[in-house]
Length: 247
Image (cartoon, rainbow, N blue to C red; front, top):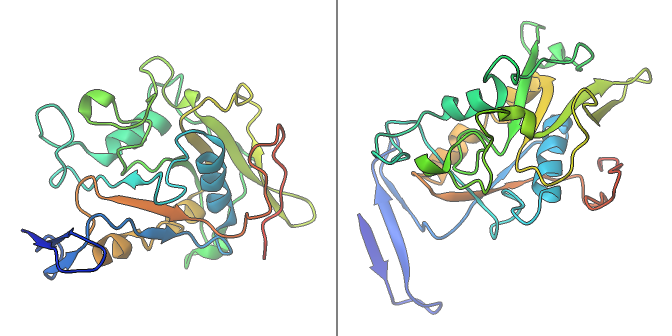
């Protein structure tokens, strides 16, 4: 249901009410909320997202409400595709991270692990992609199925076309996000990022997104942006990007 309210000082705006989530409610769909990544607890995931959204111009994927991402819910609730039959977000992730054998991510053996973040004290390596797989800006989503990425990955190269990084633990106990030199150096004309990263960091950094989507009642193609704190002193335009995260 859409209700138009025109008796406000700022002019007409739409209110949308739905029963998609556990309880009914209403939102102003023109408002783009910001998902805040916990940069202090998951700095590698935050640094990766910051790098891609700040360096890959002019898209600046999800950097601000002016350049938002568009949410793609599960295939039962999205109309992606020419047939409107919906697309699975895992299909996007597969193309970027696990596609054809020659293109799939091979995790670096020196990728930092964070077993301390797990109750079972376990961890493994994973593929962290940006833009997120559950967005229309995912480079794994073809334009023929409604994808909004200006240059989605090709069938030939898939995730190899993304900026490639990994997190490494240094001898002094600190962590750094590095360019993965097994691949060609980034040209910064890429439209996606792929990082070899701790599964705990990768998954937990987005663990609050479900409640975020529910709170702001995100439906198919609703916009949001990704708020990443701690990198205000970093210059994303430098030829070699070196910076330290703020405390």
